[in-house]
Amino acid sequence: IPSPAPIAGIQVGTSQVWARDFSDNVYQYQAGTFVGPMNPTPFKQIAVGKGQSVWGLDSHDNIYQFDFTTKTFVHVAGSLSYIAAGAQGVWGVNSKGKVFVFNGTSFVPPPKGQHKGILFGSMYVGSFEIGVWGLDTTDRPWLYNTTTEYLDGTNGATLTEIAVGTSEVWGVNSSTQQVFMYDVLAEKWVQPDPAASLVQIAAGTTANIWGVNAAG
Image 1 (cartoon, one colour):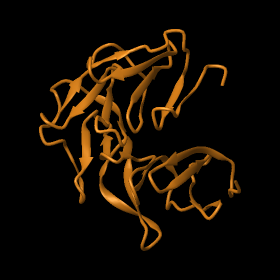
Image 2: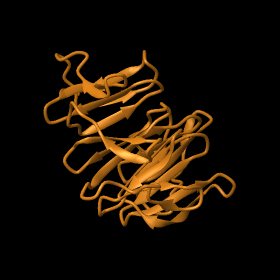
Image 3: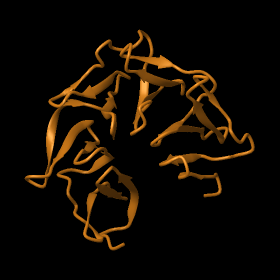
């Protein structure tokens, strides 16, 4: 696929495909090619969610949202060090480990806040109804409970990355290269294939789970 520069990473949403090059320029996929740069300043991260939900963070933790009317990224109030978007909304973490969710106007703490003393490093959002997850600074996975409106700790694994698909949630611990799946009924992380060894994982449908091992 043609692009103005070599692509370092791709983000895919429900209707949008965006990419970042090795200089942190951002490109939008349009009619068979990547177009851009689209960002006003280099972005260290982009997040693409449901419909026209496209976000970026610059090196100073400033937040930007793409405006499809003006075709530009617009600055949004707040400061985040990590951002994630999916069918379950747009979530993020700031440099102090505090969790925020976009309410349609601004980024605010979850309705009930978060457990005292627990600091987060990243969030993961998918289309699955059990679809908002966070990893704290000790690599423990937490699930956002829509009933209690809290992030609840989960058992069975420490993880460095989570992938939320349409019906399943997977995770890996890149240091140990172990692969886990969240068992919804048992409410814990399990290893469907203990022999599997991966450092990165991505989840789509149940029949569309991919991973990369240490050898690339």
